[in-house]
Amino acid sequence: MSNVLKALQAAYRAGARSPTEAWEFLRGGWGTGRGPLGLWGFGAEKPTSEGVYLFGGAQAMPKGGGVMSDPNRLAFTAHSREKGDPLIGKLELKFDDPDRQLGGLRLPTGLVNIEVPKPLRGQGAGTEILGGLMQLQRSLDEPFSIYDVQKKAAPWWERHMGAVPTEKRGAHVDYEMTPQEFIRSQLQLIRDAE
Image (tube, rainbow, N blue to C red):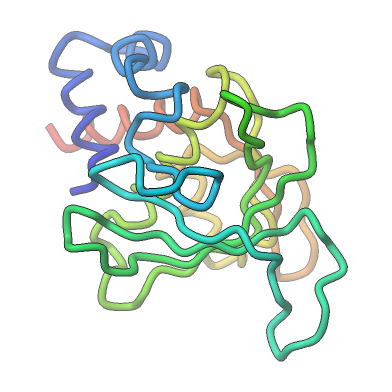
């Protein structure tokens, strides 16, 4: 189970029944850059979390080589300190709003790609990474974009992440989610498991 889900379960057990109540319960870490996702490669000299942290920030390269035409698209690896720092995912984030900052660090505005190694799929690694990205948002209703989701993965994004479709193109769907929608979907999963 991911640390994000554990934290939300603790909030639920403490009486949080809405996304706002859960956000307030978690506010000591979420939205401050000190929550479930550590920042390493966002200007921090070492991992800032005992859980998951991101490393990198180099310009993303297109598959097959070449030059990426979007300088705001950066590549990161996600690692778990709890598991001895192994790689738990690779992701590409967009940083296309220079005004979206927290503590002087530019914040991502969207997720372009996420890849969780096959042996870790279904074990909460993706939820952990996405929950960490949600904790970086400055408010419950700040939108975060998810680009180019394959249609076969769409039900998972809608049910487990609370993502709302914004555009459909062929075999891909773009989504938008907010911390509120993410927390609401996670609380519903907790209720469903009772």
